[in-house]
Image 1: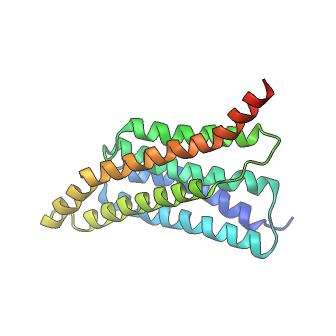
Image 2: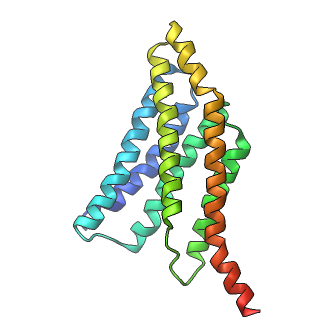
Image 3: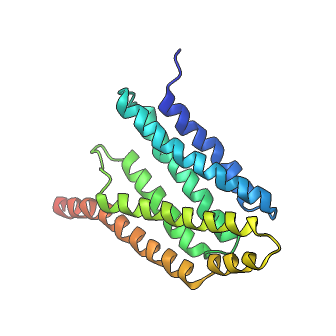
Length: 192
């Protein structure tokens, strides 16, 4: 049986996610730097699986399930890790992860295909940029372990900018959840 490259790449993200998480929450600067590299590999695998699926027409039902699931595992690992490191509050993570699970279950339990809105795509892109920003700061901070620059990077990681950027992402996440729920609520009201 030939290897299905897009599904294999999604599977790779599923394997990378817990390893990334464990290394990220480690107190070892080197482990945290390795976690950043793993996140980059995971993110790049997301690009590659989409590329191969489109270019070689390798779209599959398994892939339609695995790809977003793998994405959610990777972003959830990052957000939970950030909360455990006290970079962001847990309540924000609960809202973001909760929204992702709700929309996943809505998609699985709905006969009609629920398309991802452009607003939801923007939310995902901004979440990934935020995660990348924090991970780059962690990487640079740990490169400068024991120097004055360590404290400067640390102050950026644990800043009001980080808090309010994450708060904006939470608000955007709630708006996209409402966008998914609104058509179903309207349909339900019309059936009454």
